[in-house]
Image 1 (cartoon, one colour):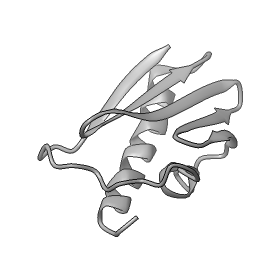
Image 2 (cartoon, one colour):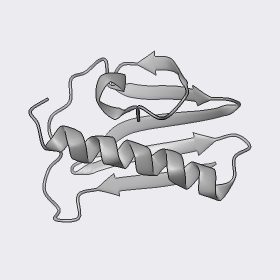
Image 3 (cartoon, helix red, strand yellow):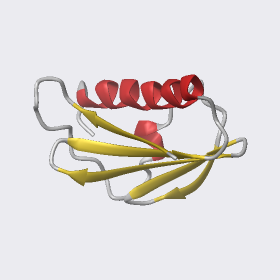
Length: 93
């Protein structure tokens, strides 16, 4: 399992996200996936890979990538989620 943390480089807070429908804000449009859970934890299935996204500590999102996936593919998935967070930060959520 690959584990990632996404924090703002400036250390600033991310915008408050709703307690449900995180997929509206965090799923990259280019990512073909199934949303398995969409509450305070977002769980996606990308082929045979499970991706969990959660807010754990102040200013930090955690992403776990489980399954048979190359490091480059896992990095790409997480990079897309981080880009969506940056986009969400630029607008009120």
